[in-house]
Length: 320
Ligand SMILES: C[S@@+](CC[C@H](N)C(=O)[O-])C[C@H]1O[C@@H](n2cnc3c(N)ncnc32)[C@H](O)[C@@H]1O
Image (cartoon, rainbow, N blue to C red):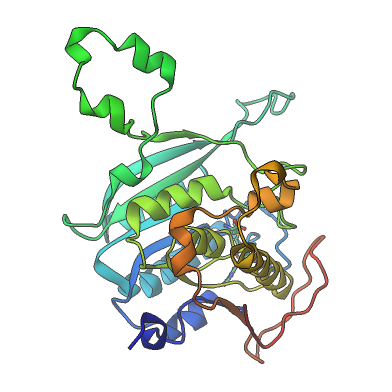
């Protein structure tokens, strides 16, 4: 039997529904990684009230979804959560009572200096927590090492460095990740106010989800986790409350599927349009990405208006 035939029907699906309700679809102990970017409760308009709760409600709701999601992880699974300094202290404590904290990663969003706060220092980073369930968690550092540049290699050419394996294999990305946020003109940018860069999500996936493994994202937004999973040869499952964002996910996955179906561009045409460049797929992803991916909208899903979101409607069950 092929892997495709064995695949459970909840894999490679984004359900357009409340994550708390939808989690019941996923069997316990079945996902390799929870990678999620919940509302930060900073008052953003996602076409729903999820980012505009009282502090007490927000923390209560956060604890509720954490308790519903953690049983879905395999025993050697991990969790990454995007937060900001505002509620990361409280939420990290919640998670530390249930898992082992391995890192606090600082994402420097490379925000340019443009005035900003006058009564405090401008905040230009997100705080990411990396947690594991137990000691033998999956972690592939070699998959995410960063190559040394030629100048550094040359500077380390003295005899004491000769044969130093680390010089060839590259270095640990460390816990300070300096990656530009997706400003309006960025080629990857979709119509979602807090879309995350593929570079960051792909690093987490390659390090903490084995090839062919499954990543769960409870709050898909524009679908970056789903896209990254397919680009990296992993499977995904997730939820998104706003139907307009579900339509964006569907469009992004369809564009990727088209990209995968197209024969490799001849060298002379290498400079493709910006959007197309953003969807470029690493070779390793091609085999796994042949599996179907879908955005699934159950009939009961409530339509919430999205600020600036596209109006495309979501078909019941689109397979690309
Ligand atoms: C911070 S954004 C995620 C952005 C995403 N990482 C990306 O790259 O596009 C959080 C998303 O969670 C969605 N959301 C909020 N409450 C939800 C819920 N209960 N179930 C599912 N999705 C929810 C919001 O509509 C919003 O799109």
